[in-house]
Image (tube, rainbow, N blue to C red; front, side, top):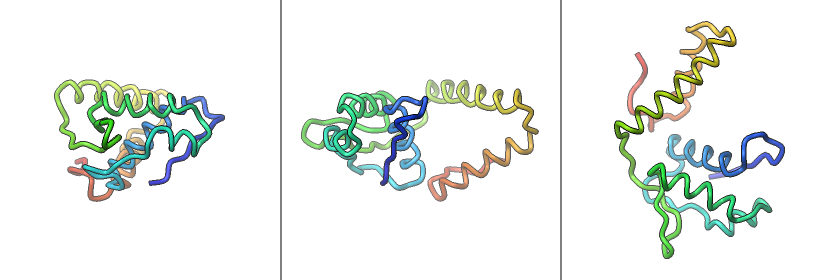
Amino acid sequence: MILTVDLDSELPIYQQLRDQIVEAIAEGVLIEGSSLPATRALAADFGINFHTVNKAYDLLRQQGLIRLNRKTGAVVTPTVATPPFLAEWTARARTLLAEAVARGLPAEEILEACRSVLDSFGSAQPEEMP
């Protein structure tokens, strides 16, 4: 897995790291049991504060995507979509879709973009959109 950070981005570094790890899980690059780099090592690689990496990992832990252990470090966990997750995810998706509609994108282009993103996750995709 290759992670990158854009120090000039408006998106905080911890969020960039979190998002890339989530995408790697969705793409099947990181599977259940995969270890993530140590926080200090990853921070040193990017020349950032290790608390920034720790914040990304803690967010992933809170979201149930990894487990943190002093001996084993950060490890990808099996995940199940729960009703609270589905409600939160639906609200976030609604906002993203609303932004596309507000900017004038036609529904078919929005659906095609969604299909393209889902297809990019390959075999990790649980089911196709109708």
